[in-house]
Image (cartoon, rainbow, N blue to C red):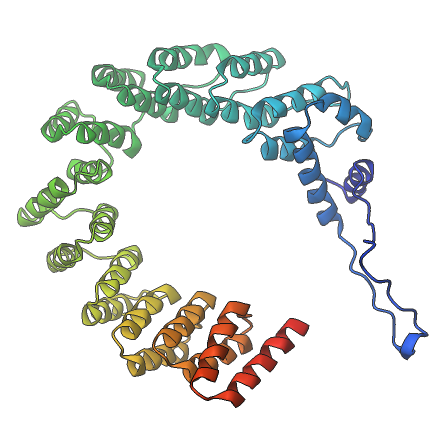
Amino acid sequence: MPASAASAVVRRIGLGLRRLATVPEYPGPAAAGLPQPQPQHPTSKDAYFAAVHHLSTIVRRDFYLERTLNRLRLPSPFPPDLALRVIRAAAPAAPLHAARFLAWLRAKPSFAASAEHFDALLLPLARARLFPHLWSLASDMRGLGLPLSPTTFSAVISSYGHSRLADQAVEVFNRLPRFGCPQNTEVYNALLDALCANGNFAGAYKLLRRMARKGVPPDRTTFSTLVDSWCAAGKLWEAQAFLDDMASRGFRPPVRGRDLLVDGLVRAGRLEEAKAFALRMTKEGVLPDVATFNSLAEALCNAGDVEFAVALLADASSRGLCPDISTYKVMLPAVAKAGRIEEAFRLFYAAVEDGHRPFPSLYAAIIKALCKAGRFADAFAFFGDMKTKGHPPNRPVYVMLVKMCVRGGRFVEAANYLVEMSEAGFTPRAPTFNVVVDGLRHCGKHDLARRLEQLEMSMKGN
């Protein structure tokens, strides 16, 4: 959108640059012999997004929307990209008001709605279950010769399915060719999800055979949707039989069936069955892929079963599993939180040896565990090692270390890290300053507390 168009919209809706009455005027050059500071004016980009925000607020909240829009005397022709951004901003909260805004625009001869304008409305209408309005817009799109997006109608089919309207989801699927929308893999997956959500496994199985006849290639989502549904229903062996039957028909999933079963059990919350199945896999010499192992490890750690996750990782690694950085991101914080500091160090250095660059959150988990165990000297040394090896700490690491020092009564070290944090360009919050200053005064370090207060005041002044 050109800067001139943005400025025109801003002027029309009353977002001109105004000086607040509570702000004092800048002194003239003659006052005190100082040069007059120049105020910072918004750029054209600021004006553009101010217009988007203001118009979307009007669309969402104004009861007499059309009358208000007419009174604004917006420029003609209305910029299409601005209209699209306003619809996207307003439609999730107020899809009917956004539809009224699009209808108001379409009534103007100078505005030509595109498929993107309609797509931005169809998905919010589907999520709000406003299906009559959705089909009215779809009919308008067909009348204008605009293409319908398979992604949008996949979301519509899923919305019907999760609203317990499986028959209507099937009807939408069958009506897509009339609207010129292709029935691709994404659309088939949406209908599979709708059928499985309503327990219609026989219909889902028939839909898979139809995919084979039509030559539509399945993907991982196709198989995982069905396997997840079987596992959620507690029918593990039926899921295994389904995968075996698909393989016998030449319908091979893009990943191994056992990985899909483990994923399905984890998503269904059947953690004990997933653990038993994963153990049986490793004993048979069949390793899960890394993504499957990570999802299982995350579920185990969230459930507090860190011991089993560590043992499973050691067993799988000895049999040839190669952990990735996501594995360490899941395992290391959980192990450190459980108080197994030495095991956390082992995982950390294993990640380094595998060629992964540790990020601050991995360091932070170990530093926090060391502080909780009262090993502040080791925590400070590890923090120094983090900086010397070229991994600069970020704000959360500094804040966590200061808080742990305060909890441990190490107020001098907390003050030093506050100063270091400010020198690194991170401004500490006032409550953090206050708790450290109070601790310094309590332990008799009044000079250091005064210097810290001066630092806080100088940072506020800047």
